[in-house]
Structures are given as structure tokens and as C-alpha cells.
Image (cartoon, rainbow, N blue to C red):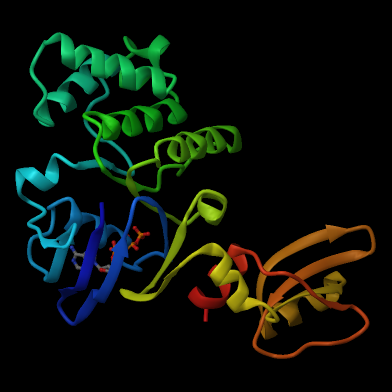
Length: 289
Ligand SMILES: Nc1ncnc2c1ncn2[C@@H]1O[C@H](COP(=O)(O)OP(=O)(O)OP(=O)(O)O)[C@@H](O)[C@H]1O
């Protein structure tokens, strides 16, 4: 399956939330990175049919498609950032509700079997009769992921799936997403670079509505080779260095602070060493430029 966004534009007044964005998505995980206001939510709202006024076209397997049509929506699973308004609902009822919205038959064995399958996959079986208000943040996220998986959609849209999770839950969510990637197009928007670093097939960088690129992590890293340094310094030098350079990380070491600098300048010196870039460096280099 291939989903292609072609020259997508969305304007609010004079401001372009998306400006001529063309991306071909194939069956794999695409990490969508961008600072606040980059256009990630706008992109998702278009794909989920929540914004209808935009220009450009969307193609599914080479054919122009209308995202509001049943045929497209049947293929789509959407995990929003949060859910509001269901504190009294039990996990089981919540999933049944969404199963019906997705066109599955009400109170039929096939629907129940599908819910069982999803609860198993997302480790929620023992929590199925808990109310939303009784769930931890991590469990709520899993329920939201679970409803996105109902009816086995070919396209999964995940909006900040690990926001607010502790490191253990974040890893568990990441693994669950990776397990679901076979035969699916997964679009995962996040601010958290480590979420996609190891699971994304390609990383999409969006900045103020513009597409900076859609490339494999390795390609982004190769492009940044020679632009990342580690500078050893002490606290007194820190402020000055922060003013001069884009800093992607600061680490405490026995003999001082190791500052990770992302720059176009060629740096050399006793306390300076060139290091291999990470996706975090890529983010800082392109999005904070
Ligand atoms: N309903 C709206 N009316 C006016 N401007 C809007 C509206 N929705 C979004 N925008 C603007 O469009 C741009 C893109 O916003 P969008 O919410 O898509 O970004 P985002 O990458 O999802 O940001 P965040 O990570 O903060 O959710 C921003 O400049 C935003 O202010």
C-alpha cells in the first residue's frame, strides 16, 4: 500500500500551516518531527477528515482518494493525543463503542473476539472492566492505541503516542508500535526524538509548514556528519558557548561539562572533538536553525 500526499497546502489567514507538502508513505513507520506549530496536527486532521478545506491531492495506491469516504476511513486507525469526556466509561465499553463506530456489528461474537485480540496485544486484559478515571496515564495511552488497532487498519496515525509516559512505559509503547508495523503505514508525530530514533524507517522533518525532508535516519545522520562536536568546558564558559552555538546536549563528566555543539563552523582545539551525529542533533540543526 502507498499513501501519497501531493502538494498539500493549508492556510489560516496569511499563515501556511502546511505549505506544498508532498510525501509518499509506504508500508513502514514514518516519524514526523517538528517543533510546536510545524503543521503535524494539521496534517493529521486532513488525513482523518477533520479539515476539509485544503489544496492538493491524496493518492492511495496511485488513485486519487477522498479521505472522508468510507473506503478510506475503513483503512484508518487514529490515536489522538488525549481523550476527553469518557471518565465513567469502562475500557471494554470504550472499545465496543469505537468498534461500532468503525462499522463492526453491535454485540456480535466477531466484535468481541476482535476486542479480546486487541486487549491481549496491548496488555489490557486485566483492566478491561476499569473505568477511564481509574486508569494510569500509561494505561489510558494503551487504550487509545488499542482503539486505533480495532478492525485491523492498514494506516495508523499516532499523535504523540508517548506524551506524558515514564521511560518504561515509553519503551513498552514503542515496542508495541514496532510490532504493529508489518503491512501497515504508520505515521507517528512526536517531539520526542528517541521515540522514533530506533523504530522509524524514515524521518519526516516539518518546519513552519514546510517539508525539510523525508529520509532514512541513516541518511539524515550522514548529511550531518562533520557538523557535530563535543566541547569540554567549565560552568564559567557555558553561558558564552550557549550564546555562540546551538547546543544539542550537555553532559556532566569527571573533568567538567561536555557540550554537544551542532554547527557549520569547523572547530578544532585541545578540548574539542568531532563526534558522530544523532537524530537529536539533526533535530537541533534543522529545526532550530
Ligand atoms: N484553527 C486554527 N486557526 C488558525 N491557525 C491555526 C489553526 N490550527 C492551527 N493553526 C496554525 O497552523 C500552524 C500549524 O499548527 P499545528 O497545530 O498543525 O502544528 P503542530 O506541529 O501540530 O504543533 P503542536 O506540536 O504544538 O501540536 C500553527 O502556526 C498554528 O498556529
